[in-house]
Image (tube, rainbow, N blue to C red):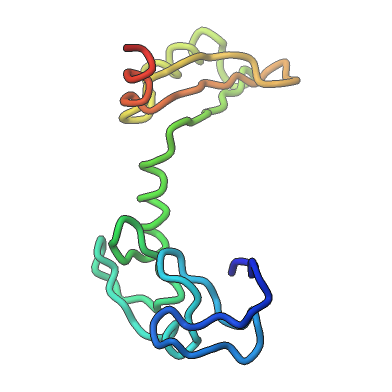
Length: 137
């Protein structure tokens, strides 16, 4: 649930009912604040087809999604990733090879460097390939 930006009672984004006390209506991502009766109504996830309560759903790009599919959708838009490797469990040469060969799909390896304040951790930084290509052209 998100904090209120103002102290005025909110109205339900679906039925228009006003809150009796500010902060009692939960926030549904992409919908707005909803009363509990509307929040308990079932909606269908447009990705997996499961029926979930409106309170446990979110809207992303106009689609109603369960929270699991919403998180998958958000992950697709993440432009920068960092993956950690431990030199105590494998040698640095294999870390470099793994960082390059096991790059997440749709990402380009930018750099592999020591983790901040570490003597054994390595960080591989990746960027969305489309973003990388736009910056480099």
